[in-house]
Amino acid sequence: MQRPLIIAPSILAADFAKLGEEVRAVDAAGADWIHVDVMDGHFVPNISIGPLVVRSLRPITRLPLETHLMISDPDKYLDDFAKAGSDAFIVHVEGNAHLNRTVQKIKSLGKKAGVVFNPATPVVAIEEIIHDVELVLVMTVNPGFGGQQFIQSMLPKIRRVRELIERVRPGCDLEVDGGIETHTIGAAAAAGARVFVAGSAIFVAKEGITAAMQNLVKSATGG
Ligand code: DX5
Ligand code: ZN
Image (tube, rainbow, N blue to C red; front, top):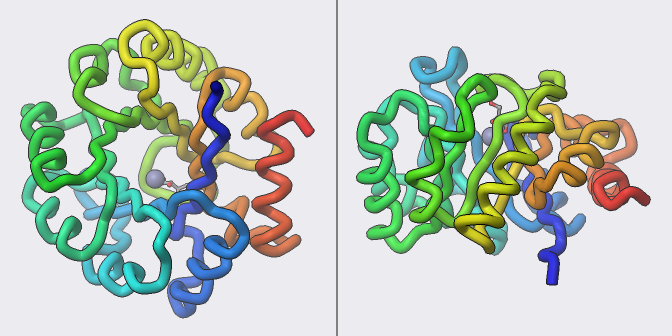
C-alpha cells in the first residue's frame, strides 16, 4: 500500500517569539513531523538555531523532530542534538568527505538517518549511501533561506530519485524541501515525493495554520 503523504512544517518560518505556541498549533492541525533547519553561516549564508531550541521544543510536542543540518561539520554536533531530543537527522552530501561515517554515527545514536542534496548535485551522488539511509531529501531551492521559489527543473530529479528508490531501496522516504506551496506540491507529489517540508506556506499563510495545512494536503492529492 502506498504510504500516505507526510507534512513536515519548517519552523524556520515560524515567529520565534512564540515558537512553542506555533509548534503546538501545527501539531494540533495534523502535522506529521517538525522540520528543524540548522544553519551555521558557513555551509549556508545564514544562521538559525542550535540544540538549545530543540531542547526547548522537546516537551512541547511528541511529533518527531527532524533536524536538517546545513552546517559544515555535522559530526561535531550530532551528540548535542541527539541529547536535546532530535529524532532524525538529515545531512548534506556536499562537502562531507566521510558521509558514510556521519550516517553510521547517526545510527549508532539510535536516530533515523537521511541524506539531502542541493539542486545542482546529481542523483548519482546518493547511489552508494542510499542503502544506509531511511530518507532522501531533494532540495527544491538552494538551502539557506525560507520563502524562495520552487525550482521547477527539480521535478525530473525527483522522478529519478523515485526510480532509484523503487529499484534499490523500496521503503526509503522521498522528501522535498523549499518553495512547497499549494501550486507546487501537486507536481512534486506526482513526481514521486511523499514527504513535504513547508515553512512559509504554513506559518505565514493568510488563511491561518490549520486551513493552510488542509489546503496543502488537498493540493498534493489533486483535490
Ligand atoms: C531552506 C530550508 C527549508 C525552508 C523551507 O534552506 O531547508 O526547510 O525553511 O521554507 P519554505 O517552505 O518557505 O521554502
Ligand atoms: Zn530544511
